Image (cartoon, rainbow, N blue to C red):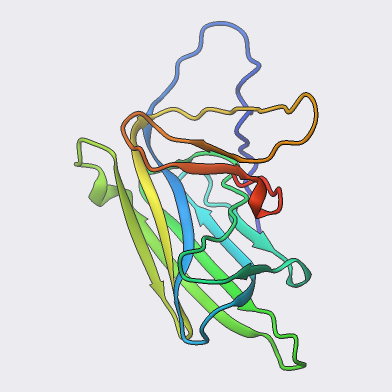
Length: 197
């Protein structure tokens, strides 16, 4: 697989006057297994990646190896997202490739939970004046995966850094835009201290 070389802080250190282009973008709010023919809990591993118009290379949203599975207890629980590592541009289509498996501890072969592709079509959404929240579902043999996203009109990408200067941090760090109040979870200490986005 080819991975994106475009990072969120790529253009932060240049000097002088800069001209910025703004375009529509997509914030990924959550990825959930909203139905499972196998019931719950599920030990989930695999990948969810996005590809956009900028370079069509892999931008990971979720990536876990078999030995580092995530336990999903219900359809209300989201996958712990570790990306995207940069903004997703909505000039054309954004493709989401899902390849999720279920770890089996009883000596059986692991099962494919969800494999397929879903698409957000930026051309169809281009005429809308305001940002909005939407969902794309991927129905597969054993499950339905929901990708919930927010379209942000005329956006610019921002990189932020949070430093804990002393001690441990327990809690949740979220972000949102002024036009769309659905929050992105950047960090949740209840989720094992994994950085979300």
